[in-house]
Image (cartoon, rainbow, N blue to C red):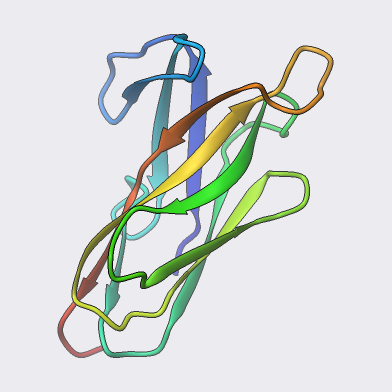
Length: 136
């Protein structure tokens, strides 16, 4: 399965594929996912099949400005789980592929302070994972 890449910029961006969000401090940010099964960051797996795993990484960013601070499963049942690596640059997502449906999860992104210390501003970036019925 193809890894998912996340591009984040400060401010709003009204171009195709970009989503504007408001951060915890009220500031505007925009994000765009690429990669995955549809090149928009979304993944599709076959339900009742073997579990699948993929990574979400930042595109064109070294981790000095943005980092992942947590993975938040927003759906029930909980087919999805995620682990953020120690430096906040990768989330490894595992889908048990048990249930048919569309699942949303929050990749919470933090904005590091100018001195590189831990983030004090956060916002969610929500791609979709689809578990479809069917055969390989």
